[in-house]
Image (cartoon, rainbow, N blue to C red; front, side):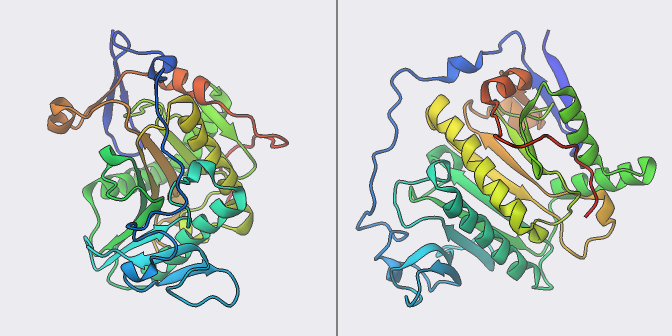
Length: 328
C-alpha cells in the first residue's frame, strides 16, 4: 500500500508510492549523453571575455591586479539583467562554460559558497528585506535559461507562506519541547542511519523521511546555527567538499539529472534563534510534477528515501559522525 509521510518542518504531506516504486538503478539511463565540454562560448554573457554583456559586477573573486568587469575573475556576481525583484543577483560560479559544482575543485566550490555568504549578508543589511533565497537551477526543466554554471539570489520585502509555516512549526516545537526541531531531526537521522548519506564534524546529509521527489537531499549544519550568514571558515571548507560530492554522485550515477538546490535561512536578528536552523535542500527533477501535485500540494515520490540514501551513500574519509545540536 502507498505510504503517507508528513514533513515536520512544513506540515506538507508526501505519498511514497511503494507499489509504483522504482529502484534507484532504474534512473540510470543506458545511453545518456553528458554535456559537451566547452571552456568558452562567444555568445554566452557569463563566459570570460564577455563581461560587457552583463550589468556591472557587484562582487568578484579575482586574480591580483585585474580590474572589475574584465577577465581575471574566478567567481563573479552581477545584477540579473531581467530581475524578478529589486535585489536579484546572478552568481557566476566559474569562468568555464561547461563546469559545474559537481566537478569543481574544493577550493573553487569554497569561493562559490563564500560568495553566497557575502551577498546574503549584503542583502540582509537592507532593512526592507524580509526573506532571502539563494538557489541553483541546473537543467532546462528547472527554469535555467543559461547553460553556464550559475546560481541566483532573490531578496523580497515579504515572507512566503511556506516560510511562515516553517518558522511557526520551529517556534512551536521549541516552546513545547525546549529543543530545536531541526537538531532533533538530524539527531534522529544519525541514530537511525537508514537515510544518512554522509556525516562529518560539521554537516549531516540525508534523504528526508518525507522526500517530495526521488533522491531529495537535505544538508544540515551540525552546529545549531540559525543563519547561513554565520557559516564559519571551517564549515565553508567542509560544505565545499560535501556539496560537490553529492552532486557528482547525481552526475555520475543518475546521468546528470536536472535539479534545484535552495538555501533556507533565517536572518541574524530573527526572534527565537534557538528554535531555528538553516539548511540546504537539493531537489532532483527525475519525475514530472503533475496535476495532482499542483492541485493538492501533495507530492508523489516513487523512490523510497531509504533506498535513495543507500544508493547515494558516501564515505567521509577521516570524518567521525557527530550528533547535531551543539549550540552556537
